[in-house]
Image (cartoon, rainbow, N blue to C red; front, side, top):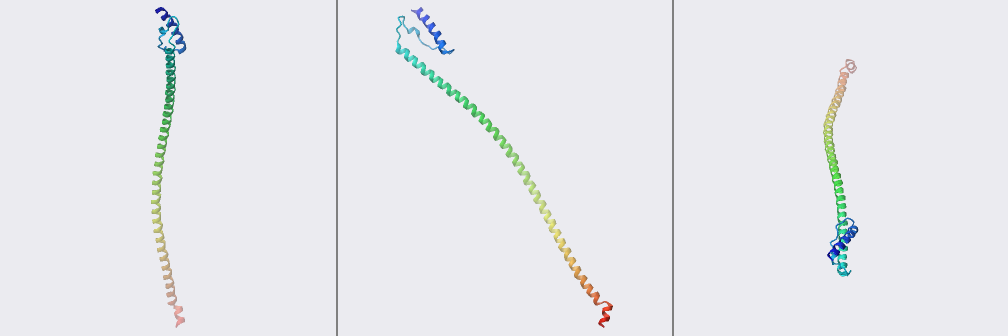
Length: 161
């Protein structure tokens, strides 16, 4: 019986290797099969049921692990893309901030120059007003002088006498 068990175990194991397609063989006690062919079917059915259930659980676990790997890879890729975009936006914001500072500085410089030009313009206006006032004064003085010349002109004085 021992020889029979070993021979039967060996041939069953080869079949099992073919069924498992390169996976580890299952630990099944083929010596529990008696020489006369009687087998405790309940035990074998239970073992088969357990093996099938474990196989399904392992396949489900494999699917879940693969899904996690794929999800993690995609999440890392999305995170890297997000980080790159965030860095690009930060660089752009920094450049825009610098441009804004430069433009504000330019605006302040232009405002300062406008104030200087306004002061110069005001000074020119005051100078012009003063010049016009002097010109008006000179015109009035010329009129008065002309009147005095006319009045003290010897020909006019003769007519009055």
